[in-house]
Length: 228
Image (tube, rainbow, N blue to C red; front, side, top):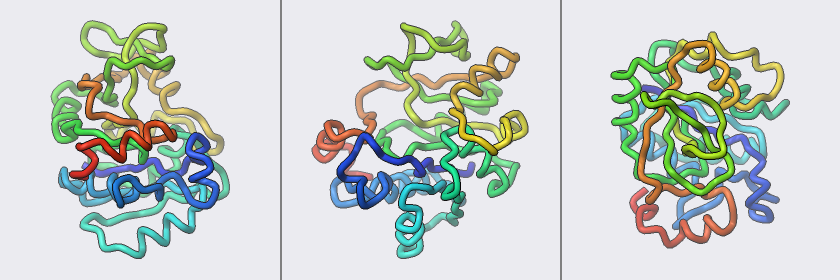
């Protein structure tokens, strides 16, 4: 399995912290979000990681170059145009082997999800995409059928957790990366076209979106984050 860390966002919810640095380099418990995410992927045996960059891209690139990592790291450069989650994934496609599943992980997510088990579930179910989801109070909900396959957006349902596993065949099914577009919309389109866009349900506790000030403060005290 290879890894893709989404780290190109503007981090607007974390301003003013992101006025002079990217969200990926905001610290939690003495370590940057990027460092924690890289180590998280390395811990499950991922040896090749691609990281997309845009906002303060040079600082991210310099940070990566200043450390020694177990995994080989490549940069997917979006400095010319921020491509959103879907366009960003398509743009990064040439950097992957095309032979292995890819774990996609938002840089601002902390969790105790068993990432190896997510890939096992993905493979056993024969999914094109497997979305980590949980029951949380949010306005952005997705609905799934009795088999756990994506149906679409909903007012009641499950929330996407910013972590997923995709098969390399997905790349050929995404639009070209000449414009920004969200990947969830593409997953819904593919699901309606008969592709298996599955789900992996995990407990909502010990999962945290650190993309806003109130949860960043919570993360500083979250006991699970100290082990990352």
